[in-house]
Length: 312
Image 1: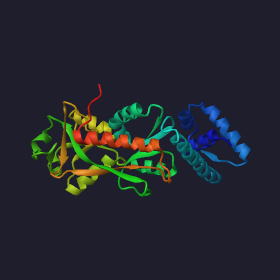
Image 2: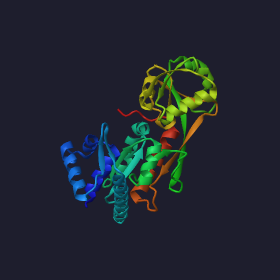
Image 3: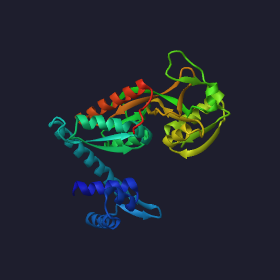
């Protein structure tokens, strides 16, 4: 039994498709299919059954996959401890981050980390906070930026910052007539009830911003016009900047464009709590801690400046 083979089986379980797993493993589909057949024959049990939509684990497969994940997790923990003995002169760190936040923060994070620790390899996992929490519990990521509250992790979570949720619009949008000034504040603010006549561009229900927007509408007792409700939060923000409606974004991800304007929601604003979370284990690698420190630095800078510089 080799670690590479266990990784193949776990990837098949995660993707529930031989073709998708083969793509992620940079293998030919026929090679991965042949591997699975031979591996099941050697074990003497079926790990997966074929379905109309792909594959799914058998009862025996679930037992095998659970143990394979555990073996891979413990191997990575040992690797991390050995790499730490080399004072970050090598090794690997797997960072979990949401796709939307990655688009705005990741270039800064990776640039700083690479300058300080050029011999440490960084792998990225893009998922929402709920899935990142699952992967932390499974030990498949080393550190992740997550939104609070979490449901499965407690002691491995370090509070980062409160990130304000803002409205983004084109600076010529009529919502600006409803905006209020507050002395000393970074942004003007608007009462959400005053935005009911305007069109909104909402991301999917499963995204934090998409769910937040719908909750805020309900709380304010309004039913604004909504469009494109199954797109990503990043695309919604881009469309709002171009004058196609209003959208929600984060202060840490507010890009400094000439055509964009950002508004606080209500005079006091509304906020999301962010945290760094580490695997569901007792050991946290030096590389993961170093990555956490860089994330803190970048987030502090973005929140202090109120916008992310556009990369040319």
